[in-house]
Length: 228
Image 1: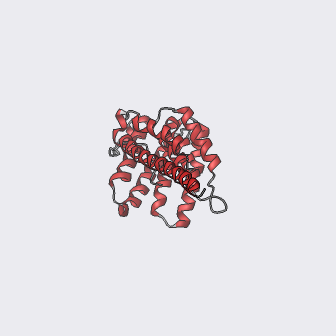
Image 2: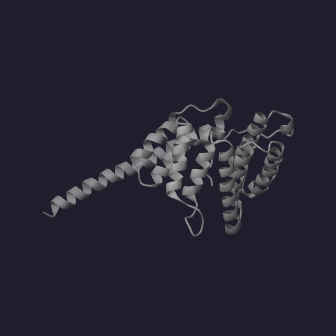
């Protein structure tokens, strides 16, 4: 799930658990970003496995918090790219269940990013009977994320991408523009700028679709008049 992206590029400290809970979560975010953006695919699998062990240790230390569950889900979903189809499908289902648990503990966890990630899974995975893909559920999750964080880069980007995939380039452009123009957060400059760049590329796709649609309308009008 290459598009599941919302974090900074730093290295996880070996003293993570001597820090505050918030600092530990930030360091986990940072290590995930380092693996996702700067580690070769051949080395990502072992790196994700090691990171998952660290997250599960944090979850045991703080059993009633949503953030470790969220990050377990993100790592399992991205780690699925390194697995065989059967194992990947199981990992995606586990990621969904972890996100549901995180949302039950704190619906606003990670500023709505749990809803963003869950919504993204719903529209990216295959539909029943293969998996749980559901466009209606995806739309509901993504719109909930926007209510929680209407100015967020990730909430706007992924809803815009969802609309673009459903052939709504005009609507998609509104959200992609918000994502592209939103200021990157001071503590997450690298990851936010990566997603802003993705939003700008997606905006170019919306413009191409608009131009193609307009060209198609003109051609249809021309063809209809020329046959009269």
